[in-house]
Each structure stands twice: as structure tokens, then as C-alpha cells.
Length: 273
Image 1: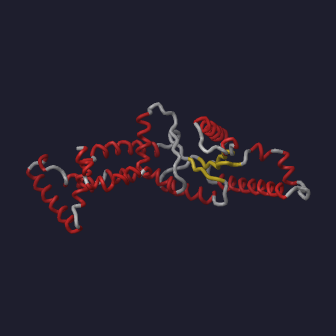
Image 2: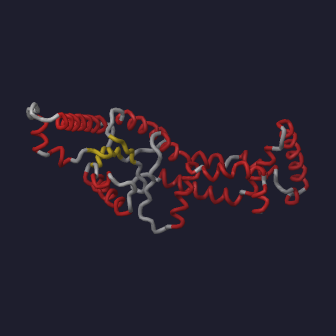
């Protein structure tokens, strides 16, 4: 019961760790949100960068393998109440508990038996988590058009290498990214502006040091962006999300800001092939 659970030494040892393990519980929380809000149209998960994102997508499978494992089932059975068993089960369980206690004494305390008792008290919690992890795994692996995985990259020297590495890791786990999104790119209108094109090729002898620095920066960014787009395009779909200047100075984005950002991204994904 609840009182026994809160008093259990193992619970005291791991409760704080469990409560703060947001990354571990994130897949279950994803399914929990859909339970509470069944009318949700789109659920957008912003994962941690790099391999942490791959770990998040792969975690439902690994957690299910652990929670469904025979080891946990045997530990719970060994620690179970003998009053619920027949004569043969009582004998087996009594002998099993004796083995666990002997192993525990060799290590100084009955760790395995204590863990089994804790798992018994957490049965209902684990069952709910298992159900939600199954939902989370189905969401991640449902594939298009239900689920889309996007790789979001900035315009940097290592963008191509990072994106291709992540794509290979995902494909090795049978997860295929729908597209690579280049974030905060130079807007197309600005790139095609005749005034900019002329300014970049004009004689800059009469320009100030600050103006020359600005044009050097723009030229370098345009060259890097074009190079990244061309190299990534050969590996799959690439979409660019232009920088939104009115959002750059915000410390916190409000719902309206996020709506504008989402609309801009949706437009790019729908327009670009």
C-alpha cells in the first residue's frame, strides 16, 4: 500500500532520482498528454539536440524491454506473499527468498529482495507506464503521414556532417527523417534583392570599416548557406526556415509568437518539394 511504499528504503533511495529523470519519463509523458487532451490535433516534441534526440526516440523500446523483462517478473514473484501460493509455490518461493537473502548477505544487505518488494508495490504504476510506453512507441514508429521526424540544423560549418550522422543513426534504428530543416536562414527575398547583389559586387573603397565588415559577413553567410543546402539536398528533402527578426529580441515566446513560427514552418514544408 501507499504507506509501505513511502516507508520502503529503496523508495527513499531512488524517489528523488525518479522524480528528476524527466528525459527517462518523457515518452510516457507524451502519451499522458494525449490521454488528458484527446482532441489534440498536432503534438510537437522539441527534443534535446544531437544524439540525445535519438536516445529519446529509441527510449520507449528500451524501457519496454526492461519493464517487460523476465528478471523483473522473477524478482516480484520471489518477493511475493506466500499466502497467495499453493504448497509447491510456497516451497519454491521460500527457497528462492532464501537464495536472495543469502546473496544479499554476501553483499551486506538484502538488495535483490528489497528491490523485488519495491517492484511489487509499484505494480500499478509500472502497468500504467507500460501502457503509455506502448502508445509512445507507436507514435514514434507510426511513420508518415501520422508521425514526422525533422532534423533541425543551424547554418554552420559542421551542419552537413552533423545532419548526415544523425540521419544514419536514425536509419539504423528504422527511423527515417522526413526532412532536414535549416533554421534561421537568410530570407529568400533578401538573397534575391537586386540592391544587395549590386552592393556585394560594387567597389567598396569608399565604404566605412563597419560597412565592409557587414558585407563580408553577408557574403560569407550566403556562401555557407548555399553550400549547406546543396550538400544536404543530395541526401533527402531540405527546407529552410528564414530568420524572423521580430522574434529574435524576445526573452520568452508567447503563444502568438509560436503560432507565427509554426505557420512559417508549415508554409515552407508545404511549398518546398
